[in-house]
Amino acid sequence: MENSIFSEPTILGLDPGRDKCGIAVMDSQEKVINQQVIDSAKAIAVIKQLWQQFSVSLIVKGDGTTSK
Figure (cartoon, rainbow, N blue to C red):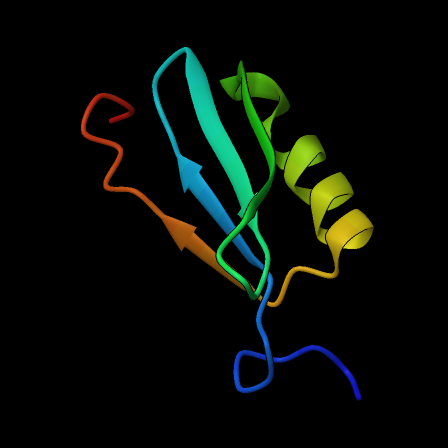
């Protein structure tokens, strides 16, 4: 069965900032399986890589208060 938000989702959390972003991936048992802080300029590439690596089914984004 393909991963979806209705069947044991893998969630990628993104907390964007002006200079850096926090990114974490959590599995369906609420265990953090990847966590990193990266340069904001590299965020899209890292998200794409994590999306494929962990079969992410949902992305949750913080409010980015300092990224505006």
